[in-house]
Image: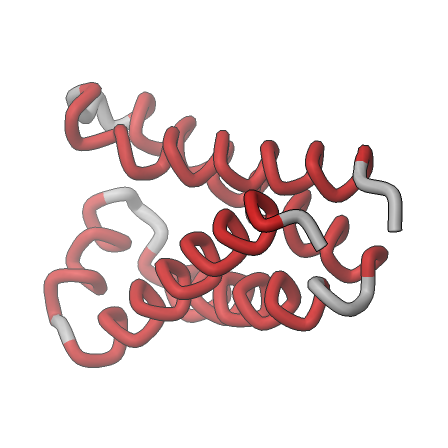
Length: 116
């Protein structure tokens, strides 16, 4: 197994799991969804992030699941970047969404090019 792939998966999955947990313990996370005009979508986004994080970890043993999870999280982060642009957030504030979009696209690339 590719150690770079494993490292990227661990960074992404643990980060998304941490973000999901913070949604439930920090009122600031819910305020962010309100600020974006996505108040009703917060819980759906968090569920997708939890599923994606779990899918990445399980995907280390199941390549199709890894591909679906990485692509799904990259797409979710693309929408996150677009939302940040729409709300005119600074590049600095938008950096995490950009980073995780690129990271999950990279995971997808590594997984698709990896030979078992």
